[in-house]
Length: 61
Image (cartoon, rainbow, N blue to C red; front, side, top):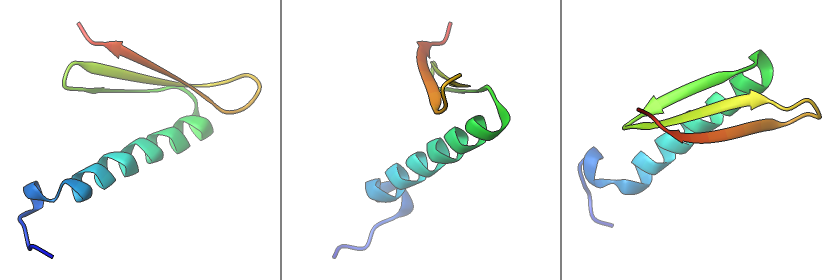
């Protein structure tokens, strides 16, 4: 396996992004509404009245 720098390890960066999203979903299901804004994309997470989490992807202005 080729050794690479942190920036070149795409699986590591992808895993970090998934971990951040999973933590946000868990916190929004416990605490309520949350919002993330990254690179012009806004992700809103709300609790659903029947359980679960409702996710909205919106292009930030």
